[in-house]
Image 1: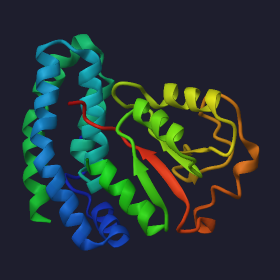
Image 2: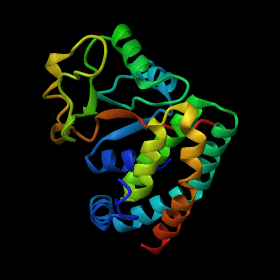
Image 3: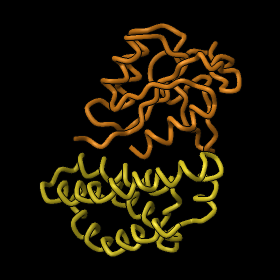
Length: 109
Length: 116
């Protein structure tokens, strides 16, 4: 899944076509406002060893990313959601540069 | 919020009036408050998940009441909710067709909410 595109243009365009370009802009803004807090949720859940909270945060992040076609980030969140708790710390740390990349790509669309 | 906004937008475009519940407890409370034609239930939610909320709704209220869900092939499917625990409501196939939904119909949707 590491080959998934940062942003899948077809998914993004289909979303815009279905719901309207203005609405999608608003939706992207909402995501960009909320995503840092979602990543904080992930980090905090990891720090406090709260496996349920971590899974929920990863799940929300995954579905949000896939909505916009941020498939690479979505795939990584999906992987984190399913990673056994004791392997999480290592798995999450290795992904943090990719979060930043996807977050920077979305506003450019 | 992204999921909520998107679900409400899509339902609105299909002519539904929708209420939003942020978790399973709110979903059960909404169904208690009024009658809905369709309940779109998410599985993973804080406080009470969608499976438990579906169980409670199925146990406390008779049809009409259906849970639409995503099939393995990605198609939305509103009749005979196989994955929703509790009783099956076979007579809902026609009622749950969005193309037949009049604008006066109401649905409730329960996308995942970030807890806090």
